[in-house]
Structure formats: structure tokens, C-alpha cells
Picture 1: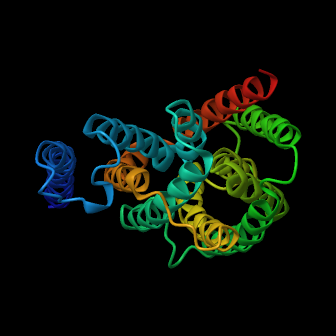
Picture 2: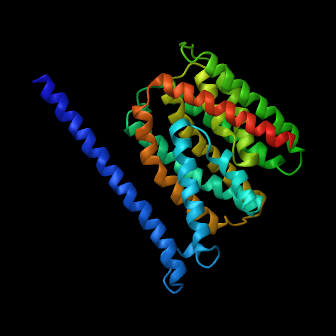
Length: 307
């Protein structure tokens, strides 16, 4: 009787996520088709915010790049803004087009990822008091750090700040890999330190939040799956506060929607797959993956600073 129950439950779980995968594939194809049709038939504008600004191929590339980067970000807690910002700069977009667009897309995506992580059982934001306290703590620090970052974004030499953050990211990655098979004790003080620094960096550059906050939580004793989910939710508030600060600083300057729309659509459509991925990954694999990716991003950041 018990085996039948388990088998039925397993079949139901498989069917539910197969349905999610089919809906995801249809949604991705639908967005790509909308970009192509809008370019081919200018009179028909299913996405009016991007009408006539960027070529259809550019929109599709931005959309698919955002989808890929956010899949990694929502699955491992890092990599979206850190990867997208330099790529979009290389593509010729201006910093004040890029950063608010990324902040807007991650504000929505982080909230969606946090809710789906909860729904898929990666964390319990209703009953796990430690997870709730960590989200609140990181959110408060994120708000303060984001406001401070935007305030000084164009007034300080960024090379020194970038160098310090690169060293911190790399150090966190090394510590995670060194302790990948050890159970660490929860330390609130570590989270306070990394939360403040990460939020400042996020508001300044549009990236760098996930490696510090996710890695910092793991080093501070939280399970990797909890850390990824908490980072998504806390990052959503960080992006919202930074976005408001940019609006005030730019005197109501608008978001560059031709970039923000494909970024947001791509990022949102990555979330359903990412949260399922996290559910099936073993804790040791999650911690090892977070550690390796944190080290890589730290090294890449240091190379960018030097060269």
C-alpha cells in the first residue's frame, strides 16, 4: 500500500513538472515569434515598448542571453547581473541603459524565483524562522547599501572598490570549497558584513550581489538550497530600492524599455526550470557548484580590474 502511494506521488510530481516544461517551451517560442513578427510586420506590435528601437535579432539574442544567465542565477544564486553587464557593454549599450534595465528585470525575477523556490520545497519562508530572519536582515542591509551605492556611483574611483570586492568574492569561494563536506554553524555577523558590501556593489554596477550573498550564507552555515532561495528574494528588494534611487537621481529618467523588456521576459522564463533544478541537486553538489562559480567570478572580476 505504501509503495503504491509513493509511486502515485512520484507519477504526479513527474506529470506536474512535465507540464511545466511544455508550458515553458511554448512561452519561449511565443516570445521569439513575437519579436520576429513585430520586425516583419511593423504595423502589428505585440510588444509596443520595443517597437522600432532594436533589430529583431538583437532582441532575440538579448532575450536568450538573459534566459541563460538567469537560469544559472536562480539555480546557483549568482551570475545574472555579473555576467550580463559586461556583455551588454561590449554590445554597445550605455551604462545608464543597462543598469536600470537589469535592476528592473531582477526585481521581478527575484520575487518570482523566491516564490517558486518556496513552492518547490527548496525553502520554507513561512515556517523556517532562520530563513525568514536572514531575508529580513539582508533586505534591510540591501536597502541601505543600494541607496549608498547609487548616491556615490559617479563620484568615486571604481577600480579600488572592484578590486576589493573581487578579492572578497574569491576568498568566499575558496572557503566554500575548503569546507564543502563540513556542516558549518550559522553566523549572523557574517551575513551582515557580506550583505552590506554586496548591496553596495549591486547598486553601483548592476552585478556582484549573488556571489557574495549566496557564498556568504553558505560560509555562515546555511544550506546551499536555502541560500539560493533567500538570495533571490533579498535581491528583489535590493533591485527595487536601487531602481527607485536611480529614478530620483536621474530626475525621473525612464527605463530603456527596448532593453528592459527582452531582459525581463528572458529572466522570468528561466525561473520555472531553475527552481526545479535546485530541488533535485544534492546539497554537496550545490555547495561545490556555488564555491566553484564564486571562485571563477572572483578571478574574472580581478582580471577585469587589472586589465
